[in-house]
Length: 406
Ligand code: C5P
Image (cartoon, rainbow, N blue to C red; front, side):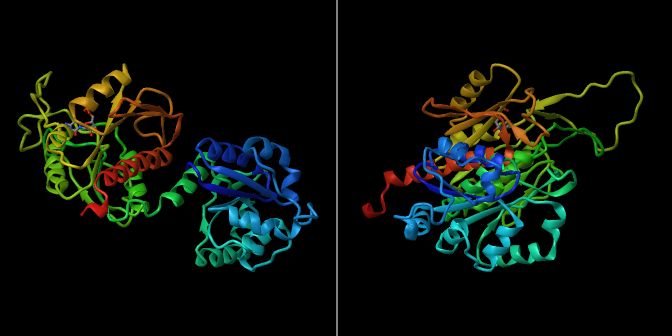
C-alpha cells in the first residue's frame, strides 16, 4: 500500500467509530490517507480524531476556507487513487446514485473518475428497502465496488444485515482493489484441504483442515488476475469461481495432480494438509469388528513440496508450517529443506489460529531470513498478504530479465 493515496469519506452512521481503525491500519500499511466527513458524521466522531490518526487535515465544509473553497473538492478528487466511503448511509447511496452534490463529500465523489469502494451500514429494513437496493444496483453498474454489509446486532437494537464489516475486512477489500491485475498473465497453483488416506472402503485417516486458507488464497489469486488451479483434498467449502478445480483424495493422488501442472506454473502455494503417512495395505472390503486391538501398518507419503523444491526452475514456491511448538525454528528448517521462497508458519494450538477457524495468527519467513509477524487476522486478509508477497517475488523476477534485453 506504500505510496497509495486513499481518500476516506465518512458519512453519518454510528459505525463511523470503526473507520478510525480503518484509517489507522491503512496509514500503518504505508498509504497516504486523507479523510472527508459529512456534517452528520462529525456528530459521531470528531474530525480531530481522524486528523491525529492520518496526520492530515480533515475536510468537512464546502465553503469552510473562503480562499480555497472553489478547488477543495477538485483537489481531494485529484489526490485520491481510491475513494473509500465508510460507513455509507442510505442517504449517501441515494445521493451518489443520482449525482446529487450538496456537500463536500458528494461533490468530491462527482468530481472523481477513479476507483470507489463503498461500505454501506444501516438498519436492515433500510438496507433491504427497494430504494436502497436500486441505488446500489445503479452504483454497481457504474463500476463502484460495494462491500456487502455483515449480519449481526445493529446499533438500533435489532439484528440482521447492515453492520459495517470489521476494519480488517474493509482494509483487505482496499488492498484487493489495488492488487487487481497484478498477477495477470501468471499461472498459480494452490493446494488446499486435507488428504484422505483410505483404511478400507469406508474409513480413512484424515485431519482437521477445512480448506479455508487455501480456498481464500486461490480466490485472492483469481482476483489479482491470475489463472488459477486449485487442487483440493477434503473440504466442505464451495470452490471459488473462475478457476480450474481439481478434487483429489490421497497424498499420492495430490502429488500426481501437482506434478502434472508444475512445469507450466509460475508459483505454487502448498497450503494442503498432506498426511505424512498412509495405510500400507488398505483393505479391499470393510474391516469387520473382531479382535480387541487392530494394528494398521503405515508407510511414509511422498513429501510433495520437497520434491517440487528439487524440481524447481523459476517457480515461486510457498509452504505452510502448522506447528504446535518451536514454530519459527521448525518453519525455518522446512524453508531450507524444501527450497522454498517463503513459508507461512502458525501455531495451530493458539486461539483464533489454525484449523477450522476463520482467522489465523501467522508469520511469514522469507528465504533471506526476514520475518514478518502478523497479528490475528481473517484468513481472507492473510490470503491477500500471501498473494501480495508472491506478486512481489514474480515482479522482482522480471527485473532480472528486463524485456529490452530480449
Ligand atoms: O513437513 P511438513 O509436513 O510440516 O511441511 C508442511 C508443508 O509441506 C506444507 O506446505 C504442506 O502442504 C507440504 N507437504 C507436502 N507433502 C507432504 C507433507 C507436507 O507437500 N507429504
